[in-house]
Amino acid sequence: MKRHGGTFFALAAAAMVAAVPVAAWGLVGQQDAEGLPASELDHAFQPWDIADGTAHAIGATALLVTAVAAALLVRATRRGALDRRWWMVLGPLTTAGLMAGVGWRVLTAGVIGANIGAGLTIMLGGPVVAGLVLWSLAGGVWLAVRGGGDANRRAAPTR
Image (cartoon, rainbow, N blue to C red; front, side):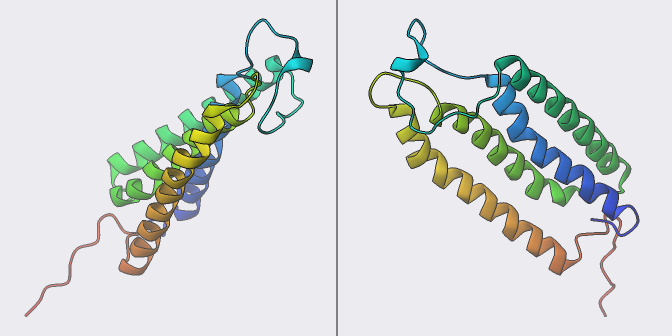
């Protein structure tokens, strides 16, 4: 990220990446089986003891933070202040965050018997999220080493 304003862009990127899973978790809501009392439901993982209304308010706030941070980053990219190659880091991280937020709701869903969705989330979603995070890590290191901070950097002329 560009040196001038790099801290601002880093904070906006961190806010966006951190807010996405919270927004997904809050807006999806608890996915318990309908028509059964809570005492009869089985959980792969116990859900947090947060009221649905509170979770939705937290999710809506996180969605607003995500939208503002993304708008700032897109604007900076369009103006050339943020190197567009950083989106190869931010895109997979936000996707992983979205999968983690929704996945947590699947893992904590109240069901009767086995939670097959929880097993599939762990078996299939876990490796995908890990791959996305590793891709972002490798891309971030590559950009940091190769000088990805300056969007307007020109290659040095060769003789």
